[in-house]
Image 1: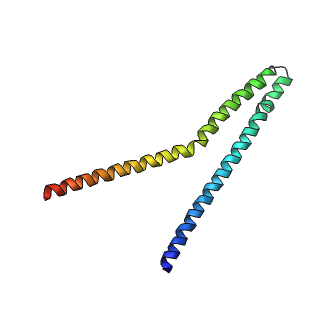
Image 2: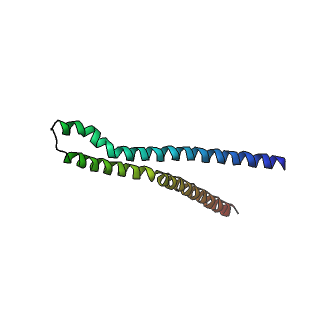
Image 3: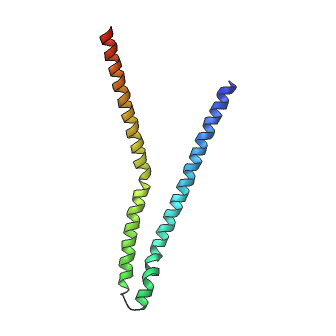
Length: 117
C-alpha cells in the first residue's frame, strides 16, 4: 500500500508541476498581450509625432497608422489566443490516427486468426 501511495503522490506532483508551468506561460502570455495592446495606443504617436511636428505628414496619418497597427495586433493576438485550441486539435488527430492504426491491426490479427482456425 505504501508503494501505491508513493507512486500516486509522485504522479500528483508531476501533474501539479505541469499545471504550474502552464500557469506561468499563460501569465507571461497574457501580460505580454496587455503590454502590447497598451503600447499599440501610444506607439504610432511616438513614431510619427516628430514627422507631424516637422510638417512632413498630416496629423490624420497618426490615426490611420494607429488603426492599422491595432488591426494587425488584434489579428495576431487572435491567432495566438487560438493556439491552444489548434494544438489540442492536433493532439486529438494524432490520437485518432493511433486508434485507427490499432483497430486496423486488431482487424488484421482477427482475420489472420480466423484463417488459421
